[in-house]
Length: 210
Image 1 (tube, rainbow, N blue to C red):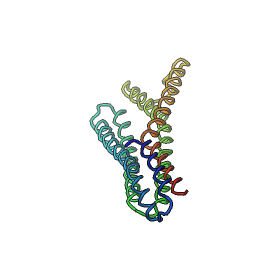
Image 2: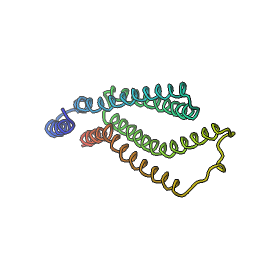
Image 3: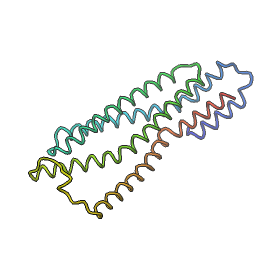
Image 4: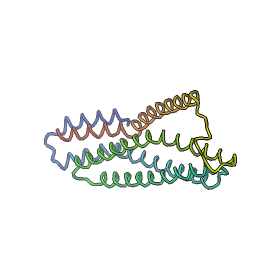
């Protein structure tokens, strides 16, 4: 059953059966209908957790075994960042599971789930966009620093480099293109993974309120 069919059945069921039903009956009905939606949210959270673990292991391996100090520093730092993100995902999954396993009050539980998922996706998007310039500048600094050390210097010194407008223009264009690409991809990804399910849960809340 796809989302459109589930939404259509929920509306028809509530329209025909709402009269004469007790609060407990309505709660049981909505709990059954929203189980599949919340189940998909939890499934996607589990996918995020698995991917985060894989990224942490990959970044950690590069951070330990790479022959370049810049790569070791870069991937080690972001492996630590991913660990904090993994902890957040686990917390979010446990919170969603706990709320969805409680039968009553259904409306309040659904509102809480919607709130925490929306807050998560909002912070997810903000964090991703903030990482774009941070990763770029950090990697550039590490690369130039390592180049200077390999040349026999004591570290990176901006005075040893002549910044030309062509190079600056190229870097700005690259950053702009990367930022636009990440922006639209992240928007699409979050909507696909969570946004459409949150929208369906809001419909359930609205129907319950009526």
